[in-house]
Structure formats: structure tokens, C-alpha cells
Image 1: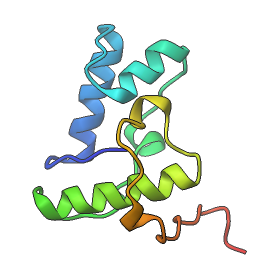
Image 2: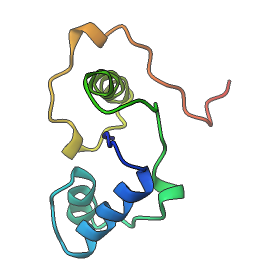
Image 3: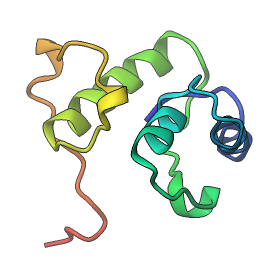
Image 4: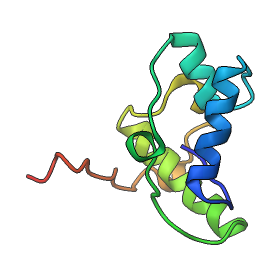
Length: 101
């Protein structure tokens, strides 16, 4: 999970380029390279969680979603660089699309 002020398809192309060139600049590329996982198309691997302009507001949304996905155990090791924020401890994790019950 991360943020970008550019279209997510552009960011996906960058991640793919990092993977193909064995460049560990992004956490996603590092995870794929270290774990020898397959990676797919932007449509299959990326999802826009919350659209907003880049800046402090986007930073707050990223922190909130990082906390929620950490609570769900859905962050890859390379993404778990920040300590949990007690302010977000009460946030409810987002439900998976498959968990509609």
C-alpha cells in the first residue's frame, strides 16, 4: 500500500520496471524479488482505496489505512516500517469484498 499523485497504472508500470531490473526501490518490488512471487496486471494487483490530492490529507489517509491493514495482517513485511499509531487503534479494518456477510 502506498500513495501516488499520479494514476495508479503509471505507478504499476514503475513497480514492474523495478522488478524487471532487479531494483529494490519500492517495497512492492522488494517483496516480489525477495519472495519470488508472480506479479500481475494493474487491474489484478492494484486498487484505488481513497482518491484525494497529494499532501497532508493523503498522508493521513495512508496512515489510517496502513494501521487498518496492519490490524488485518495484510501488510507485507517491507511495508511495516512505521510503528502503529495509537490514534488509529480504534479504526475498523476495511472488509474484503469476499467478506460481505
